[in-house]
Length: 431
Image (cartoon, one colour):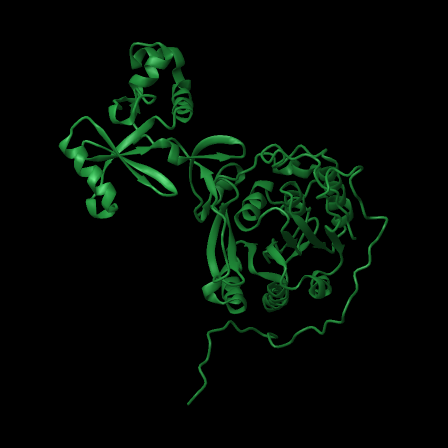
């Protein structure tokens, strides 16, 4: 019987592997930095910025951190055959694959059993990287290929012939799906206009609830007689005001929907049948640990409140996160962190999403292609522990100044306001 051959990607030099000698990380006191005062007993001193080759650094981290890193995000060179200010983005294709293979394998060993791995890439090497990472993590542990819209088809791009490229991609893997418990993440969305009814007497017993139109309820609240009068008063701001009204009254705004008896439990079926026989009266069916069912005239009342979430401190209409991330464009990306990093910096909002999707406060985040330090800056603001590795001069010129400002609470850019960041931890660099 022949041995079953697994599908794999091959390339020239694949079987040639570097010989890695053990390394010891030594703290450079001149590069270390901590906040000026202790904020709480939960302050941590073990965040690490490592200056040097990332493969050697990953090897040096193995003994201490194998199996304990909760999230790894990397934004490696895309191998576009271009030369940028702070790094060369063009190596021979087979060499690029070997470089990536070695670093992803090392990252895999550092991940916790329920850990997440994100790698950011464009379409130049996307197909090869998927095959390579499938081989290391296992195809069953691939969670998603996320499309990240990083720009619009405007400006100089608008005159490009053919298809204008606006997207990058993020490959999302986990160490072991059987141990993985993802966080539920929502994104802001527009108002759902199917919810067009309003409970006018919500404070009375539910059996006596009466429905009026949403517009009628809005006009009453604004002391207006007609919708034309509302348009005349508010003009282009009318929809904004209506949205605010809906969110302020989300527990009273509803829509009705037909429901099949087979789709609800026995108690709810009884309530549904009663609502058919007793027109005009509302019937309720309670559910343990979940919102109650309400039925009126043979239909279910669905409340707008279920569509709302607090996102970055603001109540908004929300939808579950999908694999299309087209809402994170940053007009001030060049100014984030107070450092310039052309063609390499990613929005803090992007790192916030990946970190919130995969970690909790206190978890360890690793970025072995640290660039301008975005991962560490966002992890710190979200009260996660972080490890970053960078071998370029921008380790000193970009990352240390940026993280110093974050630690001191002086960075007002990026996600600072969204996460209500204040000085809340004492952190040390090891450079």
